[in-house]
Figure 1 (spheres, rainbow, N blue to C red):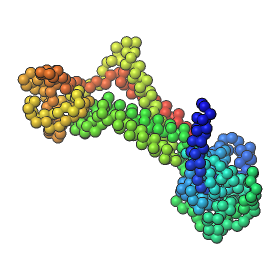
Figure 2 (figure 1 turned 60 degrees about the horizontal axis):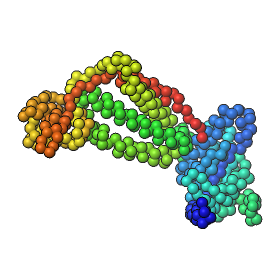
Figure 3 (figure 1 turned 90 degrees about the horizontal axis):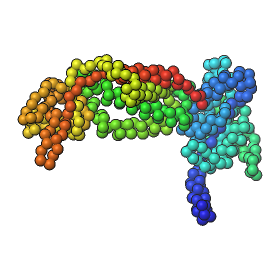
Length: 432
């Protein structure tokens, strides 16, 4: 890279960084004497304590429009656009911890909180700058059950309403001006935790959100595959369900809708994963089960398909045979006629891949027609093959077949079920 290009690149990065600099209120929490708790109770109880701390505090931060930036050991760093909301969240955190201590005599966790307002570099996943450093220092000076805030934050909130009192001052590292500290007498403030409950859901982090998206996509894809490969035939084999199956196929055409539907659902899943702060444990375990089903099913299905000569002919034997014949549409946008004649009016057009229940067969002028069910007591006709005409080649529009469930299909389904239970059983919460 030339000197000019390097300088241009550096200026571009500098401009981008400057654009991310904006006013923000930073809140830090820290568990008092957490080291002593870890030493006394051991690693497992210490880790459970931190997870409980996070699940108690996170709903309060969310209630007051805060964003948890990161977990740092037994500390939480959160950001707020409004200093008032940051202070309300701090009071709510102390109140919900006090409530928990009153309900559980074994819960003695106490937290100190520091708040500071200033300009910082606000990025998607982190925040940098003096505002963060000062907020961390303010939190360090507080004690358990205390809320400290800097003068910069106190100046934009009503000190009387929040019962603020001066608590000293300090000089931040690398600075010359003192920062005045205020202590919030949160015990005198009305309850801010009405309706807030301990978060029983798992907190999502980036890796968990990515897994959520993968599990969702795999589960949706395998469900659609099972519908196209098996379920629509099993449903259509029952005359009462045949019409419902037809409607589903018209909506979910295998060759047209799969990219659109799965693409939309994948984007929706990614959006929800990004926006959702918490996900129920059961939902993720079931989704991982769906992922396990997809892996198990496809591994067996593909192996049986390509290694049938090794597995032997028994895997191609039939387990279940449909009671009816089905007509599968082989071309795009095929018209179904009222009568078995090319001049008969078209009453419905169906996409390629549609499966219809066969009711009768008729031959008219060298064309074989399949009579298919399209409505309650309503039938239509579709040709099997359209003869060649001048300038138009011979074209097969439909084919009539039975549905067969073979041992290799059954084996794949069993492998999928095993994969499902593997996914559910092996899913583990990673506490935050």
